[in-house]
Image (cartoon, rainbow, N blue to C red; front, side, top):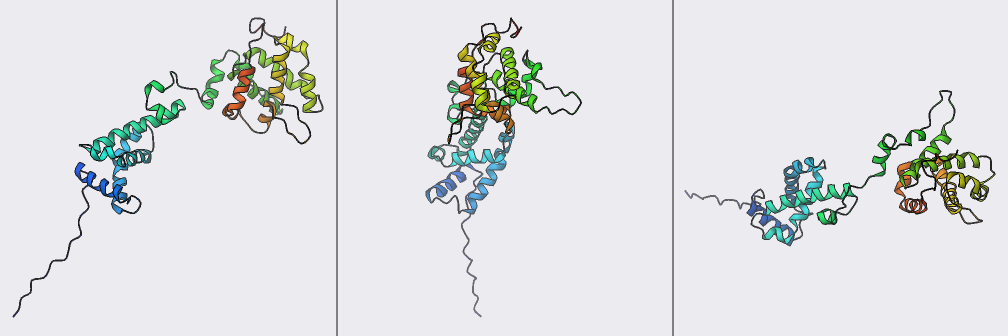
Length: 283
């Protein structure tokens, strides 16, 4: 009777244990050399593991764990990681720095590259439009007058809303509060009796007696009227919308402040009236 010893079936080579430094090094070399990140099932397992591993770092910075996994992925593709004595330590450090840079970049409204370098970060955290809008009314001495108070009789307050939003935008772009509040209120009520935006621009911008009473020069007053009402339009050529029109069309203060060109223009036009605060504007 012949006895045959069964031939053992060939065993598939086990993937390296990527939880160890050497196992990770071997896997990364294979993935990077063969560009197999998109096709290797082991690569998918590695990224799932990295997501879990670095989730605490992401949560500490209030970021999504996927953000940490992405930073880990970038580090895994770097040649310096493969040459390191402990690849996992290098990746962990890269994730921590990357997440911190991302948060600081968002906070300071700058690039991640600059956020990684403390010397290139702004000295003070920039104030976002939405954040400022939330507490502006509590900190500005003249802000109380910007509120449109409901008279309880169901009166349409849309005009008050337009005036309020326009005033807040102008003050946030360096126009002195009290004079500009009076100017915007006057312009709003003055143009309601005029036939068109062109009439408003031509007539109101030349009312120098009002400009003088509010402490503005003729040029400053004309600039303010143009900013609030909009530019003159000609046939087949549309002028720029003024602040009143933009608010009526749905923009709020935050939307206006996101328009960098508008903000720059307003700040360039802003000036300190001669009488400014102490004379209280119109007597």
